[in-house]
Length: 296
Image 1 (tube, rainbow, N blue to C red):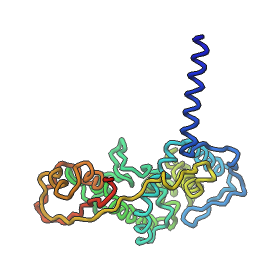
Image 2: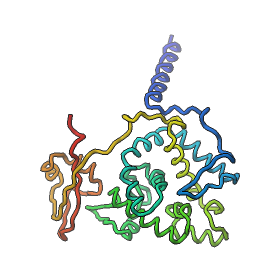
Image 3: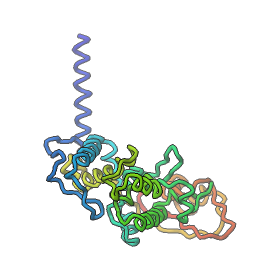
Image 4: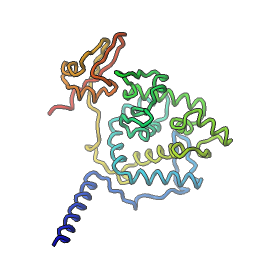
């Protein structure tokens, strides 16, 4: 009797798990996946990937298989992309940075304001010194690494400087992980001139392939088993911008004057890192206030 009840419980649990996967469309049909091979054509920012090379095929295949089976994260980044990409894309275009670099942000942070063990923060994962070098404010009260528009602009500045050094967008992407100096040194040591011929640390060696895999999967989500209904995607909340050029001693009280609460204020302005904003210099800050999305 006990065994019968146990079996019944297991069957019910498995049925519930299967049902939840089916609802969110994340069951991966392996029959749809064609292993990497010579016939695969892929590029990064218009630069062809040499998939005729045996090691390139295997490295790309590894990242494809990993991300196709990493259901939770891949599903969430597809959902978030619907909300985040429309902000990133026009900024990349404004600076003349290829659209493919939005997938670099995906592998850096999964499109959330992540914090790395080393102290990098935000969607683009800037360290404090690099952020300040690229014109962002980083202090106890204001950290613009958490400001999506400003951090995207800073990323563009970095990428354009790297492209000028390397002449290659692929090497530029690799340098975002391995550093401009680090990649240049490896190229000189190994006497090669492209990313796919370099022997690098494991993380940097995987870096571009992770970008390529997420680009392929996210652009062809249905093909790889991520059939997410449009209504299940995350979306942008309409906002208005309030210009502030003086101190705000209590952000919770300020939020109420704008018809929202402290939580919502911080959700839409994650760059505000304290409970107040002391602004003795008269600097102009734009604070976003949602105009809908939080009431019935």
